[in-house]
Length: 387
Image (cartoon, rainbow, N blue to C red; front, side, top):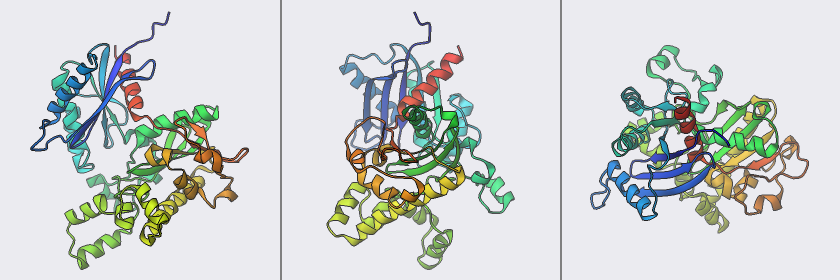
């Protein structure tokens, strides 16, 4: 009989107006229950704050006959920005909460609600270990040349200006699953992983370590996204300040909420943009072309950084479900050994799988991500090792 530790982890992804939860049995990697509580903080709602959201969660679980405290060993929290200190899953203390709060300047849209979820969880489950798992942590292995911006070095040091990268929880999970699909050890693989959702990024992974990624100091850099434009000449922003009178807050709103697919194609959802393009909307067609063009450029760049690719991996909502995007993003790369098989690509499946042609030099995979399971696994390992 196995004497391995057993138990459950409650995984929390806390947003400004929502709280996503999943109760996971770690040993079997199975979900006991999951839910999403929305409209937190709305004046007319029944969920005035995140503590109230936890009460709603307990009510929802009770209706299913589930006691969340049964076999619960920890609560794992997704925290977007860990700065330079937090490069591993971390037990939450008052000092840790203070530092997460101080990192708000680097992730103003994410760290505050992440912290609110932690505080609410502490009130709801006093005495239970709270574990913060950071989206930036996986990219702590970036070499200096990849993490450094070429601006005045002292100014950068004083204000923490450097590249951090994001989606790290997803990348860690997907890299391990890709190795399993390929039947090879992760530590000998060079992978290009494309995490494509409303937020989108790319990552070059060598031996299980991040060596380059498209997002930088903030999630604004890199690929085109749902409402973020990705790479842009900083001079264009200076021009908008001087000529259009845009303030820093105006630019923040433009770059985070009014750019990308929405700004260029009229819709924030790629499926809507593709539908409009198919109906002859030239603006939407251009948006799709730019989206695919950016991805293709990063694939080529990362092939150069890695020296080779043992696989190109698509993941997250768009990457897992949009066959037309996958085919379009890799079109024209056949000379590099990248061939997408049309039938495999368009086949509907929720399984991790290959969509490249038989014998292609560079396998192309689709690997569904599971950030909640990755958070649960990391939190579970931390608290059981500490016993």
